[in-house]
Image (cartoon, rainbow over all chains, first blue to last red; front, side):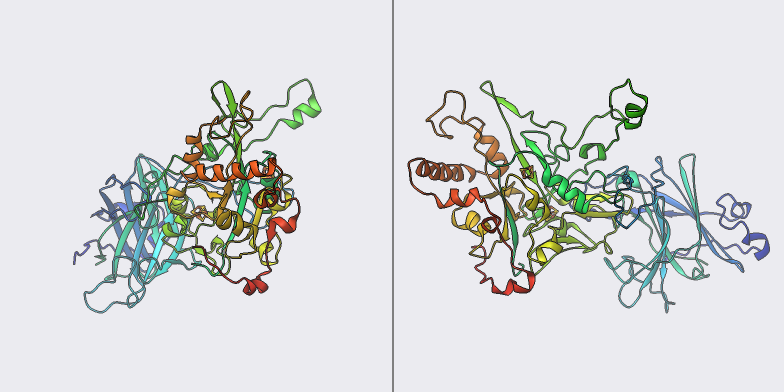
Length: 216
Length: 338
Ligand code: SF4
Ligand code: SF4
């Protein structure tokens, strides 16, 4: 198993206020680790295969008394995200209908997956969204819909829990930086990262992924 | 295979292109936010670009049992939705009523244009809705298993809670009859008016059709008009049978008026439109259907009676619709599709 050697402990007081700011000075003192990204094999015959446009993601993790934080940074030439007007679920009679601006755009997104319950020994859950004996929690941030916690116990079982979590994102100079606060990402917890590139029509299992790493 | 399969037959010889069906559907089902561009029922002029633009050429369906790749239609392919400058026109005066933006495409962009053959124009209207296919490509493509085909009537629906808006279904549907509601992040489609069907009431599009060209019932009900037209008289065909989804919406192919000076000649002898175009849409079997219908026409014209033509006239609702309430569905003695 690969181990991610990246550990920085800050004082709670100094860090808690800025932790989610991708540009916070604290992050500059934590050495980023480069995680190689892989493309999922073509899963769906409806889509053309995609090239490896994003070869890696930089990860930093900070465990502090104020919480466990992760910062992901990756290069992406196009910013694919949208601010959508709010839709009313109810049928509105005579009100002027709010329009869908597009039918074919997909959002840039990233996610951190961790086991839902402490694992024993060195065996990690299946990389494909865990397995029935080793369920996972997935912390997803997407450029259009924001942060959401999902749970899964194997491929095709991913479900939204309805909960969100603290996250911030910034796109500048061809790079996304996303910070997340994930309480259960304690030292020693295995984690895997996924990146979706909207301009490559990434969504669901069409994505970039890393193998399991362990925050030490 | 569902226990029963609801179905619709549309006689293309009777469609006026009035879009009453389109508006009935729009008012009933797609006037919510994010649904502005959606017409679960649309009527397009053929030959023509269709809605969404070039839907018949961008992919989807099956090939050798496998899903075929496809493009995703853009919003402009579906056609823009725009407002007119009513306020300026009505209250400031002096100017034309104009769309508020430059219009490059609309759902009915090439209405009534058609094409020329031997110097004469031909076209017909093709009303389209989800075909509630027996082998739905949309369902096959969905990794979330959010799409299901109801056992009791074969209606294909998208579970809005399970849908994550991935749009594999939109690519997979060869008819491009699933739409994306960007504001809700969900795929949405024709529901065959299931709340009406369950009560024994016909779909809104059929109910409102002044052309009276829509026949609705269960395909496995030997008493239904749809069963007779499809399986007994064999005068109705699905669109693009080679796409492999086994559509359950069927069409009686259009004849078009005779060409100038071709009185007395048969449709196949002196067609107004290229038969290859009809073969493109409905498969080679369309020629047999036209032959069959022409035979019926001759019989009626020479004083005989034609059961098929009588049925196709379909003046009254009880002739066109046989829709038992869901609780009475059991009474259909299933003679399943041969
Ligand atoms: S017409 Fe398209 S959306 Fe409707 S059931 Fe068939 S494949 Fe699915
Ligand atoms: S309402 Fe009937 S006649 Fe009018 S366009 Fe629709 S199908 Fe054709």
